[in-house]
Each structure stands twice: as structure tokens, then as C-alpha cells.
Amino acid sequence: MRELAATTADRILNPLGAALLVARRLPNGVDAAAGAELAQRLTQMTSQIQAVVQQMARIFRYAPQTIYGTLRQIDLTEATLPPTSDGKPTMTGPVTGGLQ
Image 1: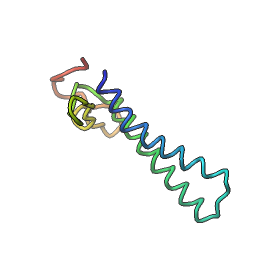
Image 2: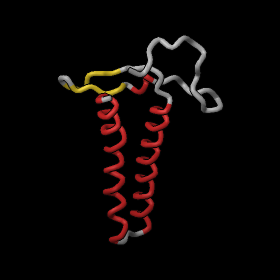
Image 3: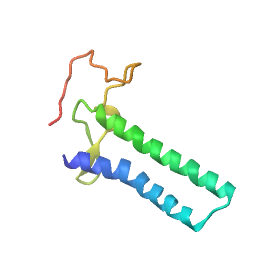
Image 4: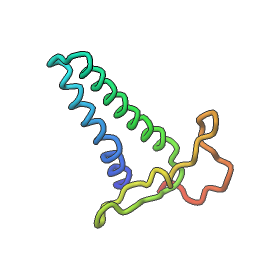
């Protein structure tokens, strides 16, 4: 569970914090070019968050990785199954792990 919390903090809260900083600039008024750049950054950051949440929804096994010292997080690439063409998790092979 600690690894999942570390993964969430790293992969979701960091881009979310950056998105909030960008959003706080908007009330100060920006020209069209700056507004377009800010909108692009917000779109990129929210897309990153959306991709991580979608990966987390497909976690099918426990796959921690060491970040530093004893701090670990879930390796989302190793822990998730690839989605099928309809976006649902692939469940064709035997599940070798499980959430612990």
C-alpha cells in the first residue's frame, strides 16, 4: 500500500501541482499567445494524469520498484496488462501475482 501511495504522489500529484500553478496564472490576464501556451500545458498535464489513472485501473499484480533507499513505488508498466482494442484489460494468460 505504501508503494501505491508513493506512485500516486509521484505520478499524479506532481503534474497536478504543476497544473495548479499554471491555472493560478490565468486570473492575472494573459495575451492570446500566452493563453494558448498555458492551455497546451494544462492539456498535457491532465493527459499525463489521465494516463496514470488508466494504468492504475489495470493493475493486476504487485510490481514494486526501489526509488531510493527503502522507498519503493509500483512499476505501472510491469504491474498492468495492456488494454485490448476496446480498452478493457487483457485477461488471457495466467495471473502470476495479485494485489497483496
